Image (cartoon, rainbow, N blue to C red; front, side):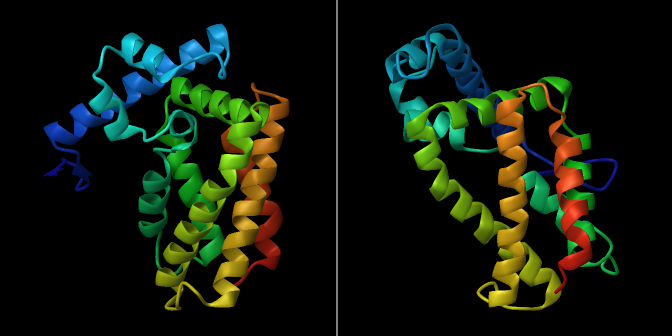
Length: 201
């Protein structure tokens, strides 16, 4: 990792190459899903479209479901959350972190997020697999909140707050699935603002 002029770490060349390969595979897969449907698209077709080897594909995505379900934005969100001023309460800090993370996304990246969410809700196999992702997201949020609050990640209150946040995010996902052109960032902010008065640690 290298240091940027703003003081934030920048990914090294190897990390950037890996990110580009990962993005290429996902972009080719999503194009095929649009053109011929999720179930009709094979991993072999994705590999051919992305012009990568089978080994490379499975290095990034263990299954076809992971191409859709894996989210590159969680680490970005946690980094933004950790960068919030220490005097800011937990839920407002998370709200600000979401705003910061979305501000760093291009219009194309936001549209891609909406498309992925709509696809997950449309395909039964993806909806079922999403349960594990929800559990992982709740653990990730709980760890970040616990660290900021000086509590244990398995503290029941911490888990309850994290669960409420992730539940609100699921409600937003359902709204985006209904309207793929919805403003994901605005809906997330609205959802957390609705929870903010009653969630404390």
